[in-house]
Every structure is written in C-alpha cells, then in structure tokens.
Picture (cartoon, rainbow over the protein chains, first blue to last red):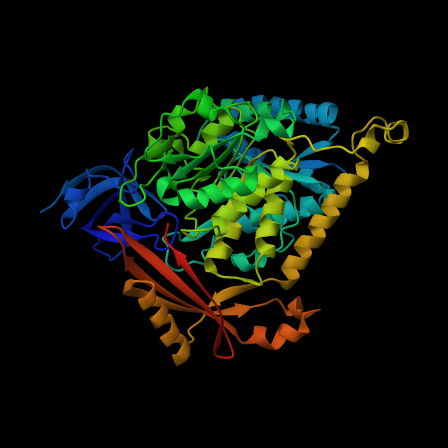
Length: 76
Length: 513
C-alpha cells in the first residue's frame, strides 16, 4: 500500500511501559500512523529523523497503528 | 469426558498447510498418547468447524474461521459439554481468532486488545473487556506461525509438549532476569518476590543482546524491557538518557534455550503473534523461544503498563504467573491464578488495570507441569498407594483445585467493578487538588484530563451492602501531564483520583516507563 502525508514527531503510548517520541505520518485524510522502517528500531531510528517536517510518499504494510515501510521518498 | 480438550479449526489448518495437515494430525496423536501414558490425562481434539466433532457439544459448527462470535460460542459449548480441566487452543489467530476487545485505555495507540481471556470465561461474546473479569478455565494457546505453510513449526511444538516432563523446583530457581536499566529497581523487586534474590539481574544497557549460553541456560526467564509491534527484538533504556539499545533478539535464541524454559515477559507486544514476513522472515521472540524447546511463554499482545518505582500492573501479573509455576502449578493454572490474583487485588479496575487483565496470556500447552509439585509423605504410604493405584496425588486434588478456581472466578465476575468513560466534570475541589499535585510532581504541561464512572455488576453488593452507597457514587478522575527531568528526558505522569460523593478517597501517581 502507498500513503502520502506530512511527517511529524509525536509522543506515543503515553504513560505506558513504552512511551516514546515517534516519527508519525499525518496523511492527507488526517489519519496518523507511526512510521517504522522494516528491520529498524521502533523506538529510535536515526534513518527516519531527517523525514521530520517533510512531505513524503511511502510504501509498506499497515500493522495496527504503524506503517512498516519498505520504501519512501520525499516529495518536496 | 476428557481431562483436556484441544480446540482448533481443521479447515483453517488445511488452508494453511494443505498436504502437510496429516503431519500435524500425527503429531497430535503422539501428544494424546503421551498425555495418556506419561501423565494419565485423557485428551480429545475438537475441530470447531467439524459438524461431527461439534455434535457432542450440541452446537452448530463454525462456518467462518475468523468470526469471533461464532468461535467464542463454539468454544463455550465445547467446554460445557466436556468440562475439561485443561483447554488448549491449537494454532495462532489465523486458525482460531483472538477476541478483539475494546481498548479501555483511551490514550494509547492500540485500537483493540486482541485477547484470549474471553475463552477462559463463561461470559458470552462481548467486546467489552469488563465482561471478562472472572476467568475460570485453565487455558493456553499452542500457536503455529501466522501466515506460514510449513507445518514443521507446529509439529515441533506439539513434540515439545508430548515429551515434556516435570523437574524439581531447584531447576527453575535460577533465572535469566533481564531489565531495561531504567526499570532496574522495579525488576529487582519482582525478582526478589519470585526467586528471593535479584543478585543475577542483567540490565540493558550496558549488557546484551549477545547473551552467553550460560546466561540463557536457566529455565526461568523474567524480562522487563521495551517491545514493539511486529518486532523480533526487545529493547533496553538507560536510566537518564533517551536511547533504546537492543536488549534481546529472537535471532540469537536458537540453540541457546534450555528445554522446558518458562518465560514471563512484561514488554509491550511481548507475546504478539505476527506474520514473520513483517520482519524479514524472523518470527517474534515468543515464537522463537517455543521453537527452541520452551514450555510456555506468558506475555502481552499490546502496549503494557507499570509504575516507574515499585510494582504494579504488568510487574504483578508476571510475578504471579512465575510464582505459581515455581509452586508446581500447570502452566495453564499458573496463567489463570495470575489473572485471578491480579483481579482480586482491586475493588474496581482502572483503565490500565483492565487492559493488563485482558492483554496477558499463555502460549504453550496448559497441562504441562514444568515444576513437579511437592507431594506429602502420606502419599508414599502403603494405604495411599493401594487406594490410589500408585498415584502421587489423589484424583480429587485437581478437581478440588478446579472447583476452587471456578469459585474464585465466579466471585470476581460477580463482585469486581470496572471503569467506564464518562463525560462528568471533576468537582472543583478535585480539579484543584489534581492541579496542586501536578505542580508538586513537577508537571510542566497538562496533556489531558479524563473522567470515568465506576460500574459494578448488579450482584456486587451482596455481603458488602455497607459500601453500596459509596460505590454508586464512585468516580475516577485522571490528569495526564508531562514532567521535565534532567537533560532531555521527559516523563509522563498520570495522577488518578478516586472520588466518592465529591470527596477524594484515594490518589495515586503512575509514571511512564
């Protein structure tokens, strides 16, 4: 599947054992998905940090609230 | 009547394994034979989709494998017809679905909580987790790999169960105790409660994930780390920095797990069964432990909770499970007793308690006794041996335990209250107190305020009538805020006030982990 949207950094799982700052895609429809690189650390992945503030298109699979990305590109 | 009933879905298994299905049937036959010969347990397999096999339960067979309501009703009918002491689900959620319960925690990302607890309860199908606070059935799930076509994995797990044997308690007294460094104090407390010592605790960082064979060799594993969805690793965290190094990797486990290992993992998603293709073909840590000879894995399907200091929620339910295993309970009874003990701690459950109750479950054959129960000297007497034909325990012992567990579960179902979201506004005095507590707790930003009413079952007032008036007006108000600590570390703090008649009767502070 493919998604497009803006990438922001957000606090997820607040108050839980695994609260963390995550890279999140806000789609054009307003949906929010945590972004994760397949095989990447789900809590902190420096590879994804440069995406913050960018508009991207990504491909991957949706699992619960997260997109496990296999490919992505910055649109502008 | 069978002592143990294994429920599965033949058509779902056939769809996955095709010509490999006979291998699974043969492995099941070996488990049934071993149960009878080695453990004196009569085992029967019921295909929930089989009209013939469901006939004895007088219930229509399941026509759609993923129809949770159908499957729940079918399992209930099988249990009512056979009244087994052990109920085992064979297959992962793409064979027998987990029940998708409503997530009682409004502020986390799990849309639902996949749960097996409804199968352990007599209550009918429902999405409301509060309907399943009184589990009575000794239950476990022996999973296969989601989405896979090779039956070898499931055949291997059935073989491990068939060959299982009980060992003396001392074989489980040594432990592999792994903690994220940030939770080391809490984990040490858990280890002391279960094993009497925390001297062997390992924390990440600085240790891991390349654990030596000798470190992994103990047969009891207690793990308190971070975990992510569809992820074959657990993660550590230093005490004062935001960093998440690998603490435990599924890929490092094969060939290093001692036969008969039993694991309790507090981690978020610690026992999630996901399709290995989501993670470059690597099954999760729970699946990998089982493939390498572990007897049972107790963990969570979703985001889990616990306090930063002391013990609570995930800490407690995992402690209760391992403690029961060490005391000689079957793995299924240990899981049931853990749920019941956790539930019994509460007059009513707040959202995180409720989620804890339904998200933890057992992967493994519930009838396996990892630790041999201690027998009484009288059981070695000639009279005892003659009357009970050489048995170590009376046939009634297990029946009495099931009766006690059924009574406990029924009492919990009848008496335990749980929160329901409400739109009530906190009384001004309560709101002010929460704000003052937030200031005192170093909260620099309030993220949200939540309100809940506490709802008890209609039968809950029997015997406790003097509390009825207070219970009717009991509410829970929570303030979620962010606290600034040293450096860049920011912690979330949740302040929970229980209110009766407008007055605060209880307060607690839960820190993010």
